[in-house]
Length: 199
Image 1 (cartoon, rainbow, N blue to C red):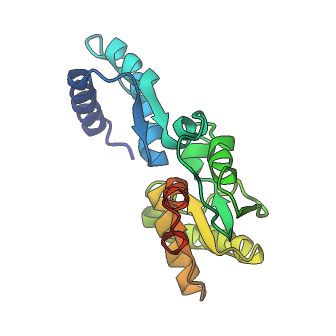
Image 2 (spheres, one colour; image 1 turned 90 degrees about the vertical axis):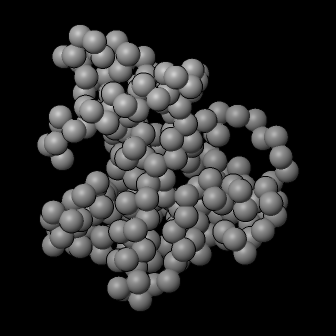
Image 3 (cartoon, one colour; image 1 turned 120 degrees about the vertical axis):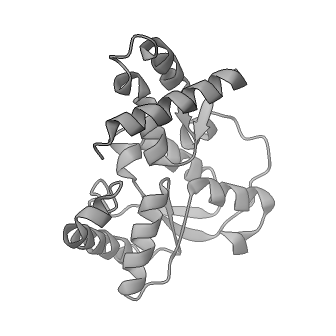
């Protein structure tokens, strides 16, 4: 949000930490964080000491949905008989271009019905800190998104970003809905464990 010097300091520290760990892939489960980390090369492009390191780091970053969707199942997946709406987080769908992988992951769960909603691409109003700095507009977006979700009559909402989960949960409760909002990986975990109560 414009605090670029601070962002660059944090990016350098994060890059150093992962360089010491000598990892091949950095898997991120929050869309906003992954989006930012994939942009470290751009953030540090004018720093001659860090530009190449930042670009190499960013090339290793993957969203957890990308990683899991690209793997063959290793564990038995038990049925989760429920209707699920997948909420496209803007930082995942628009910033990272990841739309299919979360849906692939969810469709791999037996018994789960993935339900589409109108205007699936529209922001829920969280948008990083948008709900804090533009609360009136964020509220309108949240209500629009929740109305589309309600029309689908889901049991559970899945989203790959904590900001979206908070925004949708708060808006839904204000409008009288008590849906659980979970990460797609939480549903996969519940399926592998055979525990639909946790989903």
